[in-house]
Image 1: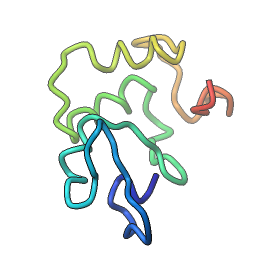
Image 2: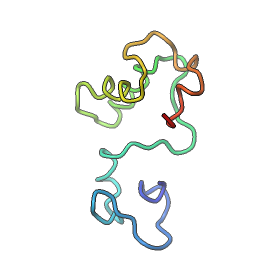
Image 3: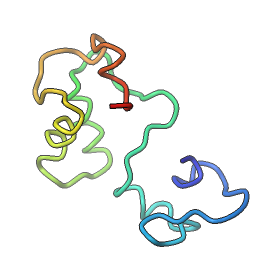
Length: 96
């Protein structure tokens, strides 16, 4: 995954995503790929919705319902008052 995202050099072979070779095209892929490498850097004192809204703005996500849709996909409530730091580990997991 790090190679696909351009975080480490491709050591051998090729990596294709969306039918195209990724080498030199990593930044074009960023808006279309979601990945968390290592530990996610969420703010424990904000809600899940607030965290995702911040990251959506930083990434330039234009879709107005992107955060709501993402939370629906993983089964978490939109506009919940629960702080991210109080989520159970399974709620923080991407293994859903």
